[in-house]
Image (tube, rainbow, N blue to C red; front, side, top):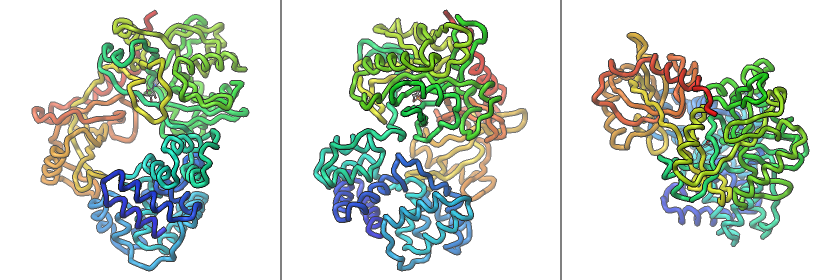
Amino acid sequence: MLQLAQTCEQIAATTKKLEKIAIVADYLKSRAIPEAAVSAVFLSGRPFPVWEETTLNAGGALLWRVLEDLSGRPEPDLSEAYRRHGDLGAVAAEVLPSRAGRDLSVTEIQDRFRKIAAARGPAAKSALVRELLSQITPLEAKYILKIMTGDLRIGLKESLVEEAIAKAYGSTLAQVQRANMLLGDIGQTLELAASAKLDQPTMRMFHSLGFMLASPVESAEEGLSYFENAFVEDKYDGIRAQAHCAGGYVKIFSRTRDDITESFPELPDVLAGIPQDVILDGEIVAWSYLVGEPNEPGRALPFSALQQRLGRKKVSDELMRRVPVAYLVFDVLYTGGELLLERPLRERGKTLDTLLAAARNPVVARARGAQGRLTFDSAEQANNTRVLRAPVSQASSPQELEKLFDAAQARGNEGLMIKDPESPYMPGRRGKSWLKLKRELATLDVVVTAVEYGHGKRIGVLSDYTFAVRDGERLVNIGKAYSGLTDAKIAEMTKWFLEHTIEDQGLRLIVEPKIVLEVAFNNIMKSDRHNSGFALRFPRIVRLRRDKLPEEADRIERAKEIYETQKFHPPMSS
Ligand code: AMP
């Protein structure tokens, strides 16, 4: 582990990509294959390969207490070090007593990680972490904690580790990338590269592939400026979900690659009815079923409705009835042993139609309809539908797009997704083959009430702002935003906040409520995170409103108004 930690120091010391790759490649070649394989996983900033989905469940607070214990330093010292470094690993290197260490290998360290993951409860986990940290040097502790918290912060992404593997073992980058994507295991990919067997891997299901992402466009004209004919779908406001279905077994992954199957117990049985092994891509939304009206379409509801269904391990029948969900499927990535990523969307779409039409459970297939308007054969079917093919239209003029956009908004959806029918599926990429056209977002003028020190390149500056709206004479917090201002502005504001601090709470400063910001956001949710009872989703600072006094900031009533309008949409147009 010591060699790996030293290598990480070298990688951090250069900003040049090629040098970083060369350092990693040299290191990997110098190790035996099993050691190099585990190192590749660690260098990607993870304790375990992606497909395993094992998590340590040893969070920052637990690690913080162990560090406090082992260093014998008081909390303010640690807070002060954290402010300077913005990183728990770097704090460890500074505060832990220097010792020789037992020279544990990376495979041994990974075994320890497995024990920590398997231990039940914080006390058992803390004991194992403490034992590990007291057997290694502070430099090793630095990188072990970084791996445990999932971020090395040495300017090395998994894609650079892939390049280093290609360089170290004389294979092409494309071969390495493909094997890593199929296996979800950069360590195993390294083993195949080292034995010249990169052409061998077959798809390992049940680990998430990267999601293809969309670029924003500002207008219908821009929406057709990259390709002439477009496939157009509604942009549903739910959560992105990749479903893996094989042999009657189903797993659903979120965009953060977490397994979210348990949150949606109504979906696996329906998905298991698809006769082939498949990987599907789509959006899970809260769904409004119109009971007893077979010719009336059901429709997707905004994110605020889905919110109550998220992050739950156990979902009651009552909740499933009150907030039903549907999975709107818009792509297929794999079926019957074949990866379809390189096929054009046009073909993947046809394959998807055929697959869903053949599903054992007819509720998958028999919803028909034009864009967003789905009709069902019976009320029973309408009320049982759980998995739907997202309707697709075509557009080749901005006017057609405008019409589709208005219809999508009238249905209460966020806007449109505009897709190039000839495009392959590019996991993890945000290109110009998928475009998103969204509605204008509302903004709020808010008052900054508290500030925190940032991470990464924002170490030592107050870059995270908690802000509030007015509620009568009081200010009530409604959100927290991390970015949006230039570095120069943040530095200037840091000085102001330090001079206007009311209470220093360590990492957080309560400041005089004088600064007004305009913030944009995607959505307002009910939440008990802030004392306003609301939280903004994806808040971004648009600008400082030096021209406004705190008394002129928005009131809670305005936030409620926005919340209500996103909840109740106008009736659907035909
Ligand atoms: P954004 O989150 O604003 O970057 O927009 C991209 C997201 O829109 C995707 O990650 C999906 O979660 C979501 N989305 C909703 N409807 C669709 C659709 N028809 N096709 C692709 N993505 C969609």
